[in-house]
Length: 164
Image (tube, helix red, strand yellow):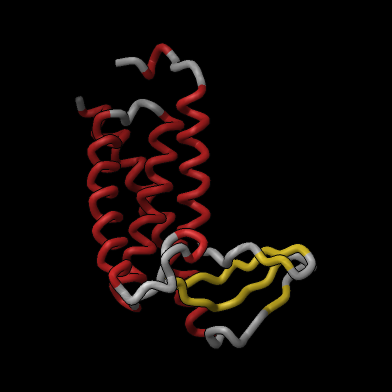
């Protein structure tokens, strides 16, 4: 039993690291870039910008009158509770637990933005020519990588030490 508690703490530290990186980068963006004005071109396909997202992924529902803030906060809090439960129950499943920790850290990072600012701070702008992927942040990247890892984990054959 102590082994499982120890494993769970490792995943919580990973979630905390994601959260810390997310919030520190957002604070730097808030401090250094004027929203919707400043653009720092880093490569021919990548900029740093400062935009606000009141919606979900890819600004889905951003044009709504404001109900989405409370809704997305509620969804993230409920999802975080479920993730914490799953991390405790499945701490020995490495890929699964890393994925959950990434999603947890990212979800909490974006919830903090919604609570403090009423929107999520996005700043990573990837583009090709004039086509820009919707701007995103460290939390979004962690959530996306975590979701991909969950898909990968669901498709692979479980290892003997993971079945318990």
